[in-house]
Image (cartoon, rainbow, N blue to C red):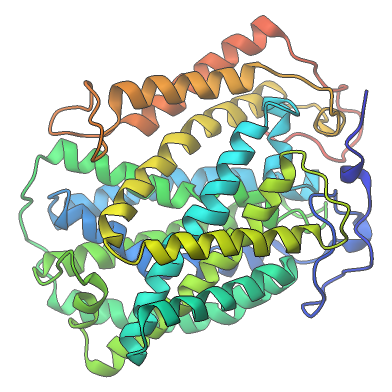
Amino acid sequence: MTSDATLGTPTAPHYGDSITAVEPGGVERIPASERHGTPSQLLWTWTSPNLEFATIYVGIISVLFFGLSFWMAVLAVVLGNAAGGITHGVLSSWGPRAGVPQMIISRSAFGFWGNILPSGLNAVMAGIGWFAVNSVSGALALSALTDLSSKLCLVIIVIAELFVGFFGHNLVHAFERIAFPLLVVVFVLGAISVFGKADFGVAGTGHTFGGFTLTFSAAFGYAAGWNPYAADYTRYLPESASPRATALFAGLGNFASCTLLMIVGAAAASAGTIGPDNPVGDLTDLMPGWIGNLVLLGIALGAISANALNVYSGAVSFLAMGVRLPLTLRRAIVALGFGAVGLVLAWNGLADAGSKYEAFLLVIAYWIAPWLGVVLTDRYLRRGTVIDDIIEDTTYVNLAGPISMLTAMVVSIALFSNQEKYVAPLAGAGDGDLTPIIGFALAAVLYAALFNLLKPATPREHSAPTHQAPV
């Protein structure tokens, strides 16, 4: 067996819980001496990043573009966020035991080289795609608040995002904790104002099935968009941390914040004053001036909260592809590189951001759902075993993972997707979108079958309480 030496190398120099030190290393296994924190911190770590306009906009498009009534929109976003929140909690619970990032744990289901597929997709989607989406919304909000040009505001937002992401794990958690009470107060005030202007009885203007499945997929894509990062922010927790508490706080933070703001978005759209040209301005127009200004500031702060995680995990996923950089600050350097590319993409995305965001959300769900189907099935099939040796083995092969994920993606997208540039033949009545559901189910079934057929290497039977593969 050829081991991936980087996983067994202790993080050096000492990092501890310092927020002024740049996190050293990349995807190494976190030693016991560096473990710190409690599961409760995950509540704000996964609440703050969702308190931003990108979350609100999912609710807006459910009524404005997908034609749902307010209450149907609420049901769709609740179900979509519940699905993404539950899986987020499960994946987060794996971090303390494994001590490595989510995309390193993913090697169990994909093999060392096969894991390039999900790691590469996540690096691009997180470090560049999500980074650009959130930077645009933050820049537009800051521009509306200050009357500065949107491009100047974009640069300001990106610099702040990269600063937090560059320093790494401890500063990310600390920043989310500081932002948490501020963002909660701001968006609760904004929500009260919006609900006062909403028309909760507004009738839907589109086909219910189509709009419902599109909204479900968009909400799931948003909430589950964090899933491939989950263990990145729990791997520093002590190994004794409760898996249930870890799952609860991570999943609840994700679900509650996404659901609240998406409902606010649906309520705002129901008022009939939100348009596609300036949705941020239309939203704040529903509020008293001072609350509107606070919400604009909150949107900018929320974008920074979200992208601190995106640029951090984008860099981690890039290194999880097997990229070896002989640099102590390799993760931090890669984060800067992703930020630079994301800035260019965001610069070009300042125009027509709404329709681009809608398509992006669905694409996210298209690949994450099959990936989830594979990794969750793999974890179930390997229950009661220790996976350290196979995720550290650079010669370990598991073709069942990449074959199942690719097949599920191709089939579900080709037959069921509903994009502006491609509507599949089985998109559903009323142009619905069942792609994520089909992709997840197909990937899970295929992986279970191929796992038994190909019989990839299995780790030693569980003989110690450390690093046990969670169920």
